[in-house]
Picture 1: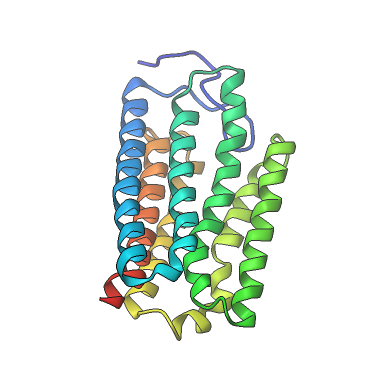
Picture 2: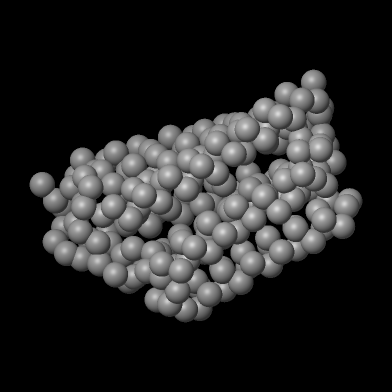
Length: 229
């Protein structure tokens, strides 16, 4: 059973998707809500402990990270569950733009650790610069650069390999493995995002997003709290 007729929603490159069933929408909503609960709860603990105990100097970078995590999950929930309407098209713009912000936000705590070095400063500038360009493109020209957006997401997301040695010199090994696992999980999720004929395809894609975000959140906690106790 489906709850609407076509078009059900709009994909990242603004073409029609198949209509989702009630079961698919319910599961997708549950995945988003679970992700938001984890992000708010774990993010609050992370910010509190680092500010009061382990790494108060890292609080601004962590606040940026937690904020972008909550925003991307919240906007994605609103976009994917909103009924087809002009508002949904506007939410699609915000959804796509928020992903760019979240990628940059995810890098911020780790690049801040090497922020006093030239390579850290340059990398932080490149990641945020590229992400802000992506945000501008998605807000100004939402129907352009459709599937190219996925390439840009992946390119910015994996750009950390350029400073791997610098990060490996200061981050715990556990943190590095969690970062790698999160990156692989995000990338694997693209398969489900593009596999539109698969039932529960959208929910599976968001499972990968939430799982990848959780692994990276764990990496931040490992770096900023566990390794400093």
